[in-house]
Image (cartoon, rainbow, N blue to C red; front, side, top):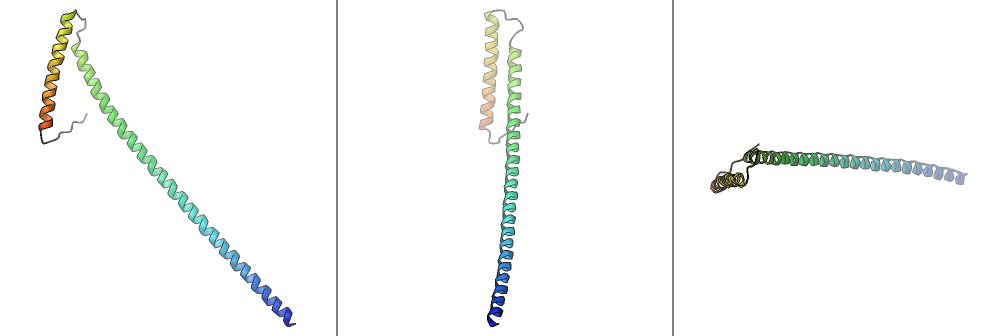
Length: 125
């Protein structure tokens, strides 16, 4: 009789330990799942931030390219204005070279004046 009572008590303790172990395992599993999901959210947030930064950099580059294109178009129009509608030989070419040389000297003088100035000016187009 004593043996069967002891056996029943041991069985009950084993069942109790199994239950506690299963609960602890489930709790640990839930904790790991939560950590995994948190890491997943963190990764997604970083991906989003990197994507936003990439778009900002591309937009900035695009604006710089637009400024360069605008400057090139203005230079093209200026040069186009120097070319007469009908070239009448070497005299017309010589005149274009004189006008362009004069423009280059004026431009280099302006650049020297700006570079020696202590105040930097920003020109936005």
